[in-house]
Length: 394
Image 1 (tube, rainbow, N blue to C red):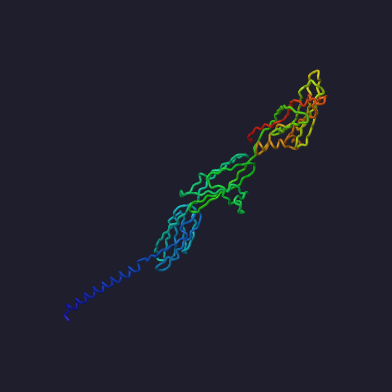
Image 2: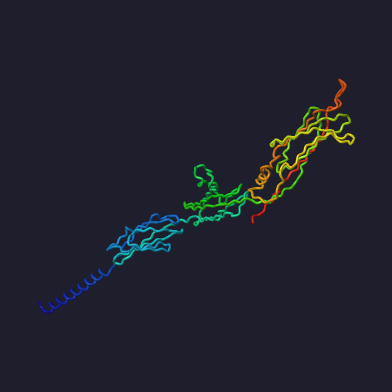
């Protein structure tokens, strides 16, 4: 073989060897310097929740590709972060909103990958309840929840149970009634005491909030002054012999009976003897009955024939004072029906009877010259009336 050709062959082999050496070195160096990244896989349940509820995140399907996953880094989107070596974690979302939760996984080669999931947190209604603090018996109480709002601006459903002591739907539970569905309710009060109730508000996503309310209903305070009055009636009629007249009255309505005085007067007649009439009174509830017959007055002094009934100190005089009561009506009834001072609170019956109309005819067949008489009955009853003035509590 010629020498020149041999040298060229050696040179070619040398360059081939150098080239292969550099190529292998580059290939080998590139394989050891590169980082294999993991694959992050995350699921969440549930993805739609109410405020304050928990979400469970599962990243156990994540793949390290090569090696192992050494770290799970969680960013929950609400300012809270966490690191775990396992791919399973739970988190509570306390505020409404939409949160983008990010998971970042790292393998033992330093490779990382991320995955995200969206969590929708529904906000519960913001209940704003206004309950009055100064309530007196007889007031109509207004409870206002009209400023209650939904964070997302949705519609709200109001359910009021206005009395926890009353089972209005008869289901055996006195605390779940729906007495009203308005945002403002009105509760009448008839007596002092405590009203305990509640309001529940629910949004269209099913989030609800409840609040109890208590209303202390106080009695009213009155200053009582007893005022004396006289009640007067006058009746007149004609009665023939043997006839009866009567009338009913209730002078004790709203007052305390103190005394009465009744006078029956017959028309004066020139013929003697005078007529004989009877005046009677019957206070039904008290079993009080009195009667009086007419007696002639002094004829020369032109005094009429009359009968009179009277009585005094029938009840004690009222004491001016200050009292508490649920209403003026209740207080008046209590004052007028105190033990020992209830005389005359029912029906009174007054009766006039024409027993004899004299003189009768002395001649047979001649008409009786005096068949009856005209009369006037005057009744005066003295009463004490309680006058009430409501006063404020100090």
